[in-house]
Length: 221
Length: 379
Image 1: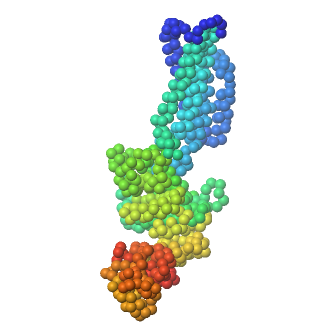
Image 2 (image 1 turned 60 degrees about the horizontal axis):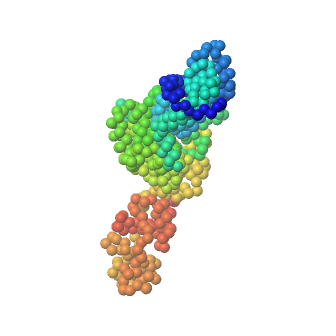
Image 3 (image 1 turned 90 degrees about the vertical axis):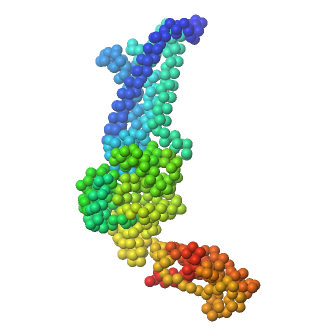
Protein backbone atom coordinates (compact mmCIF):
# COMPACT_ATOMS: atom_id res chain seq x y z
CA UNK A 1 0.00 0.00 0.00
CA UNK A 2 1.51 3.21 -1.14
CA UNK A 3 2.01 6.53 0.55
CA UNK A 4 1.21 7.76 3.98
CA UNK A 5 -2.56 7.52 3.59
CA UNK A 6 -4.57 7.08 6.82
CA UNK A 7 -6.35 3.76 7.54
CA UNK A 8 -9.74 5.41 7.24
CA UNK A 9 -10.87 8.56 5.41
CA UNK A 10 -14.11 9.46 7.14
CA UNK A 11 -15.29 11.75 4.34
CA UNK A 12 -15.17 8.80 1.91
CA UNK A 13 -17.41 6.83 4.26
CA UNK A 14 -19.78 9.79 4.54
CA UNK A 15 -19.90 10.21 0.75
CA UNK A 16 -20.54 6.50 0.17
CA UNK A 17 -23.02 5.87 3.01
CA UNK A 18 -25.78 4.67 0.72
CA UNK A 19 -23.49 2.40 -1.22
CA UNK A 20 -22.04 0.87 1.97
CA UNK A 21 -25.51 0.14 3.33
CA UNK A 22 -26.71 -1.37 0.05
CA UNK A 23 -23.72 -3.67 -0.27
CA UNK A 24 -24.01 -4.79 3.36
CA UNK A 25 -27.65 -5.72 2.75
CA UNK A 26 -26.66 -7.43 -0.50
CA UNK A 27 -23.96 -9.38 1.35
CA UNK A 28 -26.44 -10.44 4.00
CA UNK A 29 -28.97 -11.51 1.37
CA UNK A 30 -26.46 -13.58 -0.58
CA UNK A 31 -25.43 -15.26 2.69
CA UNK A 32 -28.93 -15.98 4.00
CA UNK A 33 -30.18 -17.33 0.68
CA UNK A 34 -27.14 -19.59 0.38
CA UNK A 35 -27.39 -20.94 3.95
CA UNK A 36 -31.19 -21.25 3.65
CA UNK A 37 -31.11 -23.25 0.41
CA UNK A 38 -28.09 -25.17 1.69
CA UNK A 39 -29.96 -26.11 4.87
CA UNK A 40 -33.03 -27.39 3.03
CA UNK A 41 -30.88 -29.42 0.62
CA UNK A 42 -28.68 -30.72 3.43
CA UNK A 43 -31.71 -31.73 5.51
CA UNK A 44 -33.13 -33.67 2.58
CA UNK A 45 -29.80 -35.32 1.80
CA UNK A 46 -29.24 -36.15 5.49
CA UNK A 47 -32.63 -37.84 5.74
CA UNK A 48 -31.83 -39.77 2.59
CA UNK A 49 -28.49 -40.80 4.08
CA UNK A 50 -30.10 -41.87 7.35
CA UNK A 51 -32.91 -43.78 5.64
CA UNK A 52 -30.54 -45.48 3.20
CA UNK A 53 -27.28 -45.86 5.08
CA UNK A 54 -25.42 -47.08 2.01
CA UNK A 55 -25.96 -43.73 0.32
CA UNK A 56 -24.41 -41.75 3.15
CA UNK A 57 -20.75 -42.21 2.12
CA UNK A 58 -21.62 -41.24 -1.47
CA UNK A 59 -23.51 -38.13 -0.33
CA UNK A 60 -20.68 -36.94 1.91
CA UNK A 61 -18.06 -37.73 -0.75
CA UNK A 62 -19.78 -35.53 -3.32
CA UNK A 63 -20.32 -32.78 -0.76
CA UNK A 64 -16.67 -33.15 0.24
CA UNK A 65 -15.47 -32.73 -3.36
CA UNK A 66 -17.65 -29.63 -3.76
CA UNK A 67 -16.18 -28.29 -0.55
CA UNK A 68 -12.61 -28.67 -1.75
CA UNK A 69 -13.03 -27.04 -5.20
CA UNK A 70 -11.46 -23.57 -5.06
CA UNK A 71 -14.25 -21.01 -5.03
CA UNK A 72 -12.84 -18.97 -7.91
CA UNK A 73 -12.63 -22.05 -10.10
CA UNK A 74 -16.19 -22.98 -9.25
CA UNK A 75 -17.50 -19.53 -10.13
CA UNK A 76 -15.49 -19.53 -13.36
CA UNK A 77 -16.96 -22.91 -14.26
CA UNK A 78 -20.53 -21.74 -13.86
CA UNK A 79 -20.24 -18.32 -15.52
CA UNK A 80 -20.47 -19.73 -19.08
CA UNK A 81 -23.62 -21.68 -18.05
CA UNK A 82 -25.48 -19.34 -15.75
CA UNK A 83 -23.78 -16.07 -16.59
CA UNK A 84 -22.62 -13.35 -14.25
CA UNK A 85 -25.73 -13.76 -12.18
CA UNK A 86 -26.79 -14.28 -8.61
CA UNK A 87 -27.57 -17.85 -9.56
CA UNK A 88 -23.90 -18.46 -10.29
CA UNK A 89 -22.90 -17.02 -6.94
CA UNK A 90 -25.55 -18.97 -5.03
CA UNK A 91 -24.69 -22.28 -6.70
CA UNK A 92 -21.15 -21.87 -5.51
CA UNK A 93 -22.06 -20.67 -2.02
CA UNK A 94 -24.67 -23.38 -1.44
CA UNK A 95 -22.26 -26.09 -2.47
CA UNK A 96 -19.86 -24.98 0.25
CA UNK A 97 -22.48 -25.29 3.00
CA UNK A 98 -23.54 -28.83 2.16
CA UNK A 99 -20.72 -30.85 3.71
CA UNK A 100 -20.77 -28.97 7.00
CA UNK A 101 -24.55 -29.04 7.29
CA UNK A 102 -25.02 -32.68 6.25
CA UNK A 103 -22.37 -33.80 8.74
CA UNK A 104 -23.94 -31.89 11.60
CA UNK A 105 -27.57 -32.70 10.82
CA UNK A 106 -26.77 -36.40 10.50
CA UNK A 107 -24.68 -36.41 13.67
CA UNK A 108 -27.48 -34.60 15.54
CA UNK A 109 -30.18 -36.99 14.40
CA UNK A 110 -27.99 -40.03 15.01
CA UNK A 111 -27.38 -38.87 18.56
CA UNK A 112 -31.08 -39.06 19.50
CA UNK A 113 -31.05 -41.75 22.23
CA UNK A 114 -32.68 -45.00 21.06
CA UNK A 115 -34.62 -45.12 24.33
CA UNK A 116 -36.21 -41.75 23.54
CA UNK A 117 -37.17 -42.82 20.04
CA UNK A 118 -38.57 -46.08 21.35
CA UNK A 119 -40.53 -44.38 24.10
CA UNK A 120 -41.96 -41.95 21.55
CA UNK A 121 -43.12 -44.78 19.30
CA UNK A 122 -44.42 -46.71 22.28
CA UNK A 123 -46.54 -43.74 23.34
CA UNK A 124 -48.10 -43.49 19.90
CA UNK A 125 -45.88 -41.18 17.89
CA UNK A 126 -45.45 -41.95 14.19
CA UNK A 127 -43.70 -40.22 11.34
CA UNK A 128 -43.61 -37.42 10.33
CA UNK A 129 -44.69 -36.08 13.72
CA UNK A 130 -41.97 -38.06 15.49
CA UNK A 131 -39.39 -36.28 13.35
CA UNK A 132 -40.71 -32.76 13.85
CA UNK A 133 -41.59 -33.02 17.54
CA UNK A 134 -38.92 -35.33 18.92
CA UNK A 135 -36.00 -36.08 16.62
CA UNK A 136 -35.40 -32.66 15.06
CA UNK A 137 -35.66 -30.67 18.33
CA UNK A 138 -33.12 -33.02 19.92
CA UNK A 139 -30.74 -32.47 17.02
CA UNK A 140 -31.03 -28.67 17.29
CA UNK A 141 -27.74 -28.02 19.15
CA UNK A 142 -25.74 -29.99 16.58
CA UNK A 143 -27.64 -28.47 13.65
CA UNK A 144 -27.13 -24.93 14.90
CA UNK A 145 -23.45 -25.62 15.43
CA UNK A 146 -23.32 -26.58 11.75
CA UNK A 147 -25.29 -23.52 10.70
CA UNK A 148 -22.87 -21.28 12.58
CA UNK A 149 -19.84 -22.70 10.79
CA UNK A 150 -21.63 -22.65 7.42
CA UNK A 151 -22.80 -19.05 7.88
CA UNK A 152 -19.39 -17.72 8.83
CA UNK A 153 -17.80 -19.63 5.93
CA UNK A 154 -20.34 -18.24 3.44
CA UNK A 155 -19.89 -14.67 4.65
CA UNK A 156 -16.21 -15.00 3.88
CA UNK A 157 -16.90 -16.53 0.48
CA UNK A 158 -19.38 -13.82 -0.55
CA UNK A 159 -16.47 -11.39 -0.65
CA UNK A 160 -15.06 -13.55 -3.44
CA UNK A 161 -18.26 -13.37 -5.50
CA UNK A 162 -17.51 -9.71 -6.08
CA UNK A 163 -14.83 -10.84 -8.48
CA UNK A 164 -17.53 -12.15 -10.80
CA UNK A 165 -19.07 -8.66 -10.67
CA UNK A 166 -21.69 -9.38 -8.08
CA UNK A 167 -22.40 -7.23 -5.08
CA UNK A 168 -21.43 -7.62 -1.47
CA UNK A 169 -18.78 -6.11 0.74
CA UNK A 170 -16.09 -7.71 -1.42
CA UNK A 171 -16.67 -4.85 -3.88
CA UNK A 172 -15.03 -2.42 -1.46
CA UNK A 173 -12.12 -4.74 -0.80
CA UNK A 174 -11.58 -5.19 -4.54
CA UNK A 175 -11.94 -1.45 -5.11
CA UNK A 176 -9.41 -0.67 -2.43
CA UNK A 177 -6.91 -3.16 -3.82
CA UNK A 178 -7.29 -1.85 -7.40
CA UNK A 179 -6.94 1.81 -6.48
CA UNK A 180 -4.38 1.27 -3.73
CA UNK A 181 -6.84 3.04 -1.41
CA UNK A 182 -7.02 1.80 2.17
CA UNK A 183 -10.39 3.15 3.29
CA UNK A 184 -12.75 0.92 1.24
CA UNK A 185 -10.48 -2.05 1.99
CA UNK A 186 -10.82 -1.44 5.73
CA UNK A 187 -14.56 -0.74 5.50
CA UNK A 188 -15.18 -3.94 3.51
CA UNK A 189 -13.09 -6.07 5.86
CA UNK A 190 -14.45 -4.65 9.11
CA UNK A 191 -18.06 -4.92 7.97
CA UNK A 192 -17.54 -8.50 6.81
CA UNK A 193 -16.17 -9.47 10.19
CA UNK A 194 -18.94 -7.59 11.98
CA UNK A 195 -21.57 -9.33 9.88
CA UNK A 196 -20.06 -12.73 10.65
CA UNK A 197 -19.93 -12.00 14.36
CA UNK A 198 -23.52 -10.72 14.40
CA UNK A 199 -25.00 -13.71 12.60
CA UNK A 200 -22.99 -16.09 14.75
CA UNK A 201 -24.34 -14.44 17.89
CA UNK A 202 -27.87 -14.49 16.49
CA UNK A 203 -27.61 -18.24 15.90
CA UNK A 204 -26.33 -18.74 19.42
CA UNK A 205 -29.37 -16.91 20.76
CA UNK A 206 -31.59 -19.00 18.50
CA UNK A 207 -30.08 -22.17 19.94
CA UNK A 208 -30.79 -21.06 23.49
CA UNK A 209 -34.37 -20.34 22.49
CA UNK A 210 -34.92 -23.56 20.57
CA UNK A 211 -33.13 -25.87 22.97
CA UNK A 212 -33.56 -24.46 26.47
CA UNK A 213 -33.15 -27.89 28.07
CA UNK A 214 -29.63 -28.06 26.74
CA UNK A 215 -28.57 -25.22 28.96
CA UNK A 216 -30.12 -26.55 32.16
CA UNK A 217 -28.76 -30.00 31.41
CA UNK A 218 -25.25 -28.62 31.10
CA UNK A 219 -25.61 -26.51 34.19
CA UNK A 220 -26.67 -29.46 36.31
CA UNK A 221 -23.80 -31.68 35.31
CA UNK B 1 -61.80 -41.87 25.50
CA UNK B 2 -64.55 -43.70 23.66
CA UNK B 3 -62.30 -46.62 22.75
CA UNK B 4 -61.43 -47.11 26.41
CA UNK B 5 -64.94 -47.49 27.66
CA UNK B 6 -65.90 -49.92 24.91
CA UNK B 7 -62.78 -51.90 25.66
CA UNK B 8 -63.70 -52.00 29.34
CA UNK B 9 -67.21 -53.26 28.53
CA UNK B 10 -65.83 -56.01 26.38
CA UNK B 11 -63.52 -57.01 29.18
CA UNK B 12 -66.31 -57.39 31.70
CA UNK B 13 -67.33 -60.67 30.07
CA UNK B 14 -63.87 -62.18 30.42
CA UNK B 15 -61.14 -61.92 33.01
CA UNK B 16 -58.40 -61.96 30.36
CA UNK B 17 -57.25 -58.49 29.37
CA UNK B 18 -54.55 -59.75 27.03
CA UNK B 19 -54.50 -63.15 25.37
CA UNK B 20 -51.45 -64.40 23.48
CA UNK B 21 -52.23 -67.34 21.20
CA UNK B 22 -49.39 -69.39 19.77
CA UNK B 23 -47.29 -66.28 19.34
CA UNK B 24 -43.86 -66.72 17.78
CA UNK B 25 -41.28 -64.18 16.81
CA UNK B 26 -38.20 -64.73 14.72
CA UNK B 27 -36.08 -61.72 13.89
CA UNK B 28 -34.86 -61.37 10.30
CA UNK B 29 -31.59 -63.23 9.86
CA UNK B 30 -31.89 -65.14 13.14
CA UNK B 31 -31.69 -68.92 13.07
CA UNK B 32 -33.86 -69.47 16.14
CA UNK B 33 -37.05 -68.01 17.51
CA UNK B 34 -36.85 -65.16 20.00
CA UNK B 35 -40.26 -66.23 21.22
CA UNK B 36 -41.54 -69.72 20.49
CA UNK B 37 -45.23 -70.61 20.34
CA UNK B 38 -46.17 -68.65 23.45
CA UNK B 39 -49.74 -68.86 24.68
CA UNK B 40 -50.73 -67.05 27.84
CA UNK B 41 -53.48 -64.96 29.36
CA UNK B 42 -52.92 -61.77 31.28
CA UNK B 43 -55.74 -61.26 33.73
CA UNK B 44 -57.51 -57.97 34.02
CA UNK B 45 -56.55 -55.81 37.01
CA UNK B 46 -53.54 -57.95 37.90
CA UNK B 47 -49.81 -57.39 37.77
CA UNK B 48 -48.30 -60.01 35.49
CA UNK B 49 -44.51 -60.21 35.48
CA UNK B 50 -42.42 -61.68 32.66
CA UNK B 51 -39.13 -62.77 34.15
CA UNK B 52 -36.18 -64.68 32.76
CA UNK B 53 -32.54 -64.47 31.78
CA UNK B 54 -31.44 -62.27 28.89
CA UNK B 55 -32.42 -63.77 25.56
CA UNK B 56 -35.63 -65.24 26.95
CA UNK B 57 -37.78 -62.96 24.81
CA UNK B 58 -39.52 -61.19 27.69
CA UNK B 59 -39.05 -57.70 26.24
CA UNK B 60 -39.88 -58.91 22.73
CA UNK B 61 -43.11 -60.40 24.07
CA UNK B 62 -43.96 -57.13 25.80
CA UNK B 63 -43.29 -55.17 22.62
CA UNK B 64 -45.55 -57.45 20.63
CA UNK B 65 -48.43 -56.44 22.89
CA UNK B 66 -48.25 -52.80 21.78
CA UNK B 67 -47.03 -53.72 18.31
CA UNK B 68 -43.55 -52.26 18.63
CA UNK B 69 -42.75 -55.73 17.31
CA UNK B 70 -45.04 -57.78 15.10
CA UNK B 71 -45.35 -61.53 15.76
CA UNK B 72 -44.06 -63.81 13.02
CA UNK B 73 -47.05 -66.06 13.68
CA UNK B 74 -49.91 -66.37 16.13
CA UNK B 75 -52.07 -63.51 17.32
CA UNK B 76 -52.78 -61.33 20.29
CA UNK B 77 -56.17 -60.28 21.64
CA UNK B 78 -56.69 -57.28 23.86
CA UNK B 79 -60.00 -57.20 25.69
CA UNK B 80 -61.28 -59.85 23.31
CA UNK B 81 -60.40 -58.01 20.13
CA UNK B 82 -57.65 -58.81 17.68
CA UNK B 83 -54.98 -56.30 18.49
CA UNK B 84 -53.66 -56.23 14.90
CA UNK B 85 -56.96 -54.71 13.76
CA UNK B 86 -56.16 -51.38 15.43
CA UNK B 87 -53.55 -49.16 13.75
CA UNK B 88 -50.35 -49.48 15.78
CA UNK B 89 -50.06 -45.83 16.77
CA UNK B 90 -53.68 -45.70 17.95
CA UNK B 91 -53.29 -48.91 19.90
CA UNK B 92 -50.20 -47.53 21.63
CA UNK B 93 -52.02 -44.41 22.75
CA UNK B 94 -54.42 -46.71 24.62
CA UNK B 95 -51.65 -48.65 26.34
CA UNK B 96 -49.32 -47.03 28.85
CA UNK B 97 -45.64 -47.70 28.24
CA UNK B 98 -42.73 -47.26 30.64
CA UNK B 99 -39.18 -48.25 29.77
CA UNK B 100 -35.80 -48.45 31.46
CA UNK B 101 -34.03 -45.09 31.73
CA UNK B 102 -37.60 -43.80 31.30
CA UNK B 103 -37.07 -42.55 27.73
CA UNK B 104 -38.28 -39.15 28.88
CA UNK B 105 -37.88 -36.49 26.18
CA UNK B 106 -34.84 -34.47 27.27
CA UNK B 107 -35.99 -31.37 25.37
CA UNK B 108 -39.33 -31.20 27.13
CA UNK B 109 -40.16 -30.25 30.70
CA UNK B 110 -41.53 -32.87 33.06
CA UNK B 111 -45.03 -31.38 32.62
CA UNK B 112 -44.71 -31.54 28.83
CA UNK B 113 -43.43 -35.10 29.06
CA UNK B 114 -46.38 -36.20 31.18
CA UNK B 115 -48.71 -34.48 28.70
CA UNK B 116 -47.36 -36.45 25.71
CA UNK B 117 -50.27 -38.79 25.03
CA UNK B 118 -53.03 -36.23 25.78
CA UNK B 119 -51.14 -33.92 23.40
CA UNK B 120 -51.12 -36.63 20.72
CA UNK B 121 -54.81 -37.24 21.31
CA UNK B 122 -55.47 -33.52 20.88
CA UNK B 123 -56.94 -32.77 24.32
CA UNK B 124 -57.73 -29.11 25.05
CA UNK B 125 -54.94 -27.27 26.89
CA UNK B 126 -56.85 -26.69 30.12
CA UNK B 127 -57.75 -30.37 30.42
CA UNK B 128 -54.14 -31.37 29.84
CA UNK B 129 -52.96 -28.95 32.52
CA UNK B 130 -55.42 -30.32 35.08
CA UNK B 131 -54.52 -33.88 34.25
CA UNK B 132 -50.78 -33.18 34.63
CA UNK B 133 -51.36 -31.71 38.10
CA UNK B 134 -53.46 -34.69 39.09
CA UNK B 135 -50.83 -37.17 37.90
CA UNK B 136 -47.98 -35.30 39.57
CA UNK B 137 -49.83 -35.64 42.84
CA UNK B 138 -50.60 -39.30 42.19
CA UNK B 139 -46.97 -40.32 41.62
CA UNK B 140 -45.49 -37.90 44.15
CA UNK B 141 -43.82 -35.20 42.07
CA UNK B 142 -43.49 -31.69 43.40
CA UNK B 143 -45.22 -28.91 41.48
CA UNK B 144 -41.88 -27.12 41.17
CA UNK B 145 -40.35 -30.15 39.45
CA UNK B 146 -42.93 -30.05 36.66
CA UNK B 147 -41.25 -27.08 35.01
CA UNK B 148 -37.79 -28.64 35.10
CA UNK B 149 -36.11 -30.71 32.41
CA UNK B 150 -35.50 -34.43 32.96
CA UNK B 151 -31.72 -34.03 33.20
CA UNK B 152 -32.06 -31.99 36.39
CA UNK B 153 -34.12 -34.62 38.24
CA UNK B 154 -32.88 -37.66 40.18
CA UNK B 155 -33.31 -41.14 38.78
CA UNK B 156 -36.21 -41.88 41.09
CA UNK B 157 -38.05 -38.68 40.19
CA UNK B 158 -37.52 -39.35 36.49
CA UNK B 159 -38.98 -42.81 36.94
CA UNK B 160 -42.05 -41.35 38.66
CA UNK B 161 -42.43 -38.95 35.75
CA UNK B 162 -42.18 -41.90 33.37
CA UNK B 163 -45.01 -43.66 35.19
CA UNK B 164 -47.10 -40.47 35.21
CA UNK B 165 -46.57 -40.08 31.46
CA UNK B 166 -47.69 -43.66 30.86
CA UNK B 167 -50.84 -43.11 32.94
CA UNK B 168 -51.72 -39.75 31.38
CA UNK B 169 -54.63 -40.82 29.20
CA UNK B 170 -55.83 -43.30 31.84
CA UNK B 171 -55.11 -46.42 29.76
CA UNK B 172 -56.53 -49.70 31.10
CA UNK B 173 -53.24 -51.46 30.36
CA UNK B 174 -49.73 -50.52 31.43
CA UNK B 175 -46.61 -52.10 29.95
CA UNK B 176 -43.43 -51.68 31.96
CA UNK B 177 -40.09 -52.80 30.55
CA UNK B 178 -37.50 -53.08 33.35
CA UNK B 179 -38.61 -49.68 34.60
CA UNK B 180 -36.57 -49.76 37.80
CA UNK B 181 -33.44 -51.31 36.30
CA UNK B 182 -31.35 -48.16 36.31
CA UNK B 183 -31.94 -46.85 39.84
CA UNK B 184 -30.09 -47.81 43.00
CA UNK B 185 -31.49 -50.58 45.23
CA UNK B 186 -32.92 -48.28 47.91
CA UNK B 187 -34.79 -46.11 45.42
CA UNK B 188 -35.86 -49.23 43.55
CA UNK B 189 -37.47 -50.70 46.67
CA UNK B 190 -39.31 -47.44 47.26
CA UNK B 191 -40.51 -47.24 43.65
CA UNK B 192 -41.72 -50.85 43.87
CA UNK B 193 -43.70 -50.06 47.01
CA UNK B 194 -45.15 -46.97 45.34
CA UNK B 195 -46.17 -49.00 42.31
CA UNK B 196 -47.95 -51.52 44.53
CA UNK B 197 -49.74 -48.70 46.38
CA UNK B 198 -50.69 -47.07 43.08
CA UNK B 199 -52.01 -50.38 41.78
CA UNK B 200 -54.21 -50.79 44.86
CA UNK B 201 -55.92 -47.55 43.87
CA UNK B 202 -55.96 -47.88 40.09
CA UNK B 203 -56.40 -51.63 39.41
CA UNK B 204 -54.70 -51.43 36.03
CA UNK B 205 -53.73 -54.45 34.03
CA UNK B 206 -49.96 -54.26 34.30
CA UNK B 207 -47.45 -56.32 32.37
CA UNK B 208 -44.03 -55.91 33.94
CA UNK B 209 -40.74 -57.18 32.54
CA UNK B 210 -37.73 -57.79 34.75
CA UNK B 211 -34.71 -60.09 35.01
CA UNK B 212 -34.84 -59.82 38.81
CA UNK B 213 -36.75 -62.73 40.32
CA UNK B 214 -37.05 -60.95 43.65
CA UNK B 215 -38.76 -57.99 41.97
CA UNK B 216 -40.96 -60.43 40.06
CA UNK B 217 -42.22 -62.26 43.14
CA UNK B 218 -42.68 -59.02 45.04
CA UNK B 219 -44.71 -57.20 42.41
CA UNK B 220 -46.45 -59.95 40.49
CA UNK B 221 -49.88 -61.38 41.10
CA UNK B 222 -48.71 -63.88 38.53
CA UNK B 223 -45.22 -64.56 37.26
CA UNK B 224 -44.34 -65.99 33.87
CA UNK B 225 -40.85 -67.48 33.93
CA UNK B 226 -39.42 -67.56 30.41
CA UNK B 227 -36.48 -69.68 29.30
CA UNK B 228 -34.04 -68.70 26.57
CA UNK B 229 -35.75 -68.81 23.19
CA UNK B 230 -39.02 -67.51 24.55
CA UNK B 231 -40.23 -70.78 26.06
CA UNK B 232 -42.73 -70.46 28.88
CA UNK B 233 -41.26 -72.50 31.72
CA UNK B 234 -43.91 -71.74 34.35
CA UNK B 235 -46.80 -69.34 34.82
CA UNK B 236 -48.11 -69.14 38.35
CA UNK B 237 -48.67 -66.90 41.36
CA UNK B 238 -45.37 -66.21 43.20
CA UNK B 239 -46.09 -68.46 46.19
CA UNK B 240 -46.86 -71.43 43.97
CA UNK B 241 -43.79 -70.70 41.88
CA UNK B 242 -41.53 -70.71 44.92
CA UNK B 243 -43.16 -73.74 46.48
CA UNK B 244 -43.40 -75.89 43.38
CA UNK B 245 -40.98 -74.92 40.64
CA UNK B 246 -42.15 -76.68 37.48
CA UNK B 247 -38.70 -77.84 36.39
CA UNK B 248 -34.99 -77.62 37.00
CA UNK B 249 -34.64 -74.39 35.02
CA UNK B 250 -37.21 -72.57 37.14
CA UNK B 251 -35.69 -73.98 40.32
CA UNK B 252 -32.25 -72.78 39.33
CA UNK B 253 -33.55 -69.41 38.21
CA UNK B 254 -35.35 -68.91 41.52
CA UNK B 255 -31.97 -69.28 43.12
CA UNK B 256 -30.70 -70.44 46.48
CA UNK B 257 -32.70 -67.96 48.52
CA UNK B 258 -35.94 -69.46 47.34
CA UNK B 259 -36.98 -70.37 50.89
CA UNK B 260 -36.34 -66.86 52.19
CA UNK B 261 -38.23 -65.37 49.26
CA UNK B 262 -41.14 -67.62 49.92
CA UNK B 263 -41.13 -66.42 53.54
CA UNK B 264 -41.34 -62.83 52.33
CA UNK B 265 -44.63 -63.66 50.62
CA UNK B 266 -46.29 -64.93 53.83
CA UNK B 267 -47.76 -62.30 56.14
CA UNK B 268 -47.25 -62.67 59.88
CA UNK B 269 -51.02 -62.69 60.28
CA UNK B 270 -51.10 -66.08 58.50
CA UNK B 271 -49.31 -67.78 61.37
CA UNK B 272 -50.75 -68.35 64.89
CA UNK B 273 -48.73 -66.41 67.45
CA UNK B 274 -47.51 -67.93 70.72
CA UNK B 275 -47.43 -66.58 74.24
CA UNK B 276 -44.40 -67.10 76.41
CA UNK B 277 -43.77 -66.58 80.08
CA UNK B 278 -45.24 -63.20 81.00
CA UNK B 279 -44.68 -61.21 84.16
CA UNK B 280 -46.40 -58.20 85.55
CA UNK B 281 -44.12 -55.25 86.30
CA UNK B 282 -45.03 -55.25 89.99
CA UNK B 283 -44.01 -58.89 90.52
CA UNK B 284 -41.30 -59.38 93.09
CA UNK B 285 -38.09 -61.14 92.13
CA UNK B 286 -39.10 -64.33 93.97
CA UNK B 287 -42.47 -64.42 92.26
CA UNK B 288 -40.82 -63.87 88.92
CA UNK B 289 -38.29 -66.67 89.34
CA UNK B 290 -41.02 -69.01 90.52
CA UNK B 291 -43.15 -68.20 87.48
CA UNK B 292 -40.20 -68.81 85.18
CA UNK B 293 -39.44 -72.13 86.88
CA UNK B 294 -43.04 -73.25 86.34
CA UNK B 295 -42.85 -72.31 82.65
CA UNK B 296 -39.38 -73.77 82.23
CA UNK B 297 -38.26 -70.44 80.79
CA UNK B 298 -34.90 -68.66 80.86
CA UNK B 299 -36.46 -65.35 80.01
CA UNK B 300 -39.82 -63.60 80.27
CA UNK B 301 -41.63 -60.60 78.93
CA UNK B 302 -42.88 -57.85 81.18
CA UNK B 303 -46.46 -57.14 80.21
CA UNK B 304 -48.95 -54.68 81.59
CA UNK B 305 -52.30 -53.77 80.03
CA UNK B 306 -51.38 -55.37 76.70
CA UNK B 307 -48.19 -53.33 76.55
CA UNK B 308 -44.79 -54.90 76.59
CA UNK B 309 -42.43 -52.97 78.85
CA UNK B 310 -39.42 -55.12 77.94
CA UNK B 311 -37.83 -58.48 78.64
CA UNK B 312 -35.90 -59.96 81.54
CA UNK B 313 -33.76 -63.02 82.19
CA UNK B 314 -32.81 -64.81 85.42
CA UNK B 315 -29.54 -62.96 85.84
CA UNK B 316 -31.20 -59.54 85.57
CA UNK B 317 -33.93 -60.52 88.00
CA UNK B 318 -31.35 -61.72 90.52
CA UNK B 319 -29.69 -58.30 90.42
CA UNK B 320 -32.90 -56.30 90.49
CA UNK B 321 -34.39 -54.59 93.49
CA UNK B 322 -37.24 -54.56 94.34
CA UNK B 323 -39.29 -55.87 91.35
CA UNK B 324 -39.07 -57.00 87.72
CA UNK B 325 -39.93 -53.64 86.20
CA UNK B 326 -36.55 -52.37 87.40
CA UNK B 327 -34.87 -55.22 85.56
CA UNK B 328 -36.79 -54.95 82.30
CA UNK B 329 -34.77 -54.23 79.16
CA UNK B 330 -36.82 -52.27 76.58
CA UNK B 331 -37.44 -54.06 73.28
CA UNK B 332 -34.94 -53.13 70.59
CA UNK B 333 -36.84 -54.61 67.66
CA UNK B 334 -40.26 -55.98 66.95
CA UNK B 335 -42.50 -56.44 63.93
CA UNK B 336 -46.03 -55.40 63.06
CA UNK B 337 -48.90 -57.67 62.03
CA UNK B 338 -48.45 -56.54 58.38
CA UNK B 339 -44.84 -57.69 58.26
CA UNK B 340 -43.89 -60.88 56.49
CA UNK B 341 -42.18 -63.99 57.77
CA UNK B 342 -38.86 -63.03 56.25
CA UNK B 343 -38.75 -59.90 58.36
CA UNK B 344 -39.90 -61.95 61.36
CA UNK B 345 -37.04 -64.40 60.80
CA UNK B 346 -34.54 -61.56 60.55
CA UNK B 347 -35.73 -60.09 63.86
CA UNK B 348 -35.82 -63.49 65.58
CA UNK B 349 -32.29 -64.30 64.44
CA UNK B 350 -30.83 -61.12 65.86
CA UNK B 351 -32.65 -61.25 69.19
CA UNK B 352 -31.30 -62.89 72.36
CA UNK B 353 -34.55 -64.70 72.85
CA UNK B 354 -34.76 -66.23 69.33
CA UNK B 355 -38.30 -65.02 68.88
CA UNK B 356 -39.80 -62.13 66.99
CA UNK B 357 -42.08 -59.99 69.14
CA UNK B 358 -45.24 -58.97 67.30
CA UNK B 359 -46.91 -55.71 68.27
CA UNK B 360 -49.69 -53.75 66.64
CA UNK B 361 -48.52 -50.24 67.35
CA UNK B 362 -48.03 -50.37 71.15
CA UNK B 363 -50.26 -53.37 71.68
CA UNK B 364 -48.45 -56.64 72.38
CA UNK B 365 -49.85 -59.51 70.30
CA UNK B 366 -47.53 -62.41 70.92
CA UNK B 367 -44.29 -63.92 69.77
CA UNK B 368 -43.16 -65.82 66.70
CA UNK B 369 -40.34 -68.28 67.49
CA UNK B 370 -37.80 -69.30 64.85
CA UNK B 371 -39.00 -72.92 64.92
CA UNK B 372 -42.51 -71.81 64.04
CA UNK B 373 -41.23 -69.84 61.04
CA UNK B 374 -39.19 -72.80 59.87
CA UNK B 375 -42.21 -75.10 60.23
CA UNK B 376 -44.23 -72.81 57.99
CA UNK B 377 -41.65 -73.32 55.25
CA UNK B 378 -41.87 -77.09 55.49
CA UNK B 379 -45.67 -77.08 55.46
